[in-house]
Amino acid sequence: MAAKWIFVKVHPNAKKEALIQNSPSRFEAWVKAKPIEGRANDALLALLGRGLNISTSRIKLVKGGLGHNKVFQLI
Image (tube, rainbow, N blue to C red):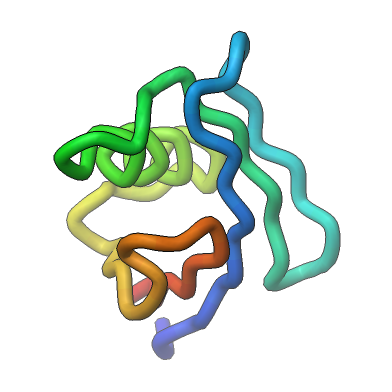
């Protein structure tokens, strides 16, 4: 499988966790974790793994580690 890029807008500190696909490469995610010490990024990574049915080791955060808009590479 060739590398694929996905773009995710994340909402940390949400009441429920959810992942919605807006287009083939654009997602919106809600995670319960607060954006402290990378906890929201870790929760988002786990949510993407479950939602996309792939191992989290195949998902790499490329851009947006500190922001709401993130870019991931799927390998």
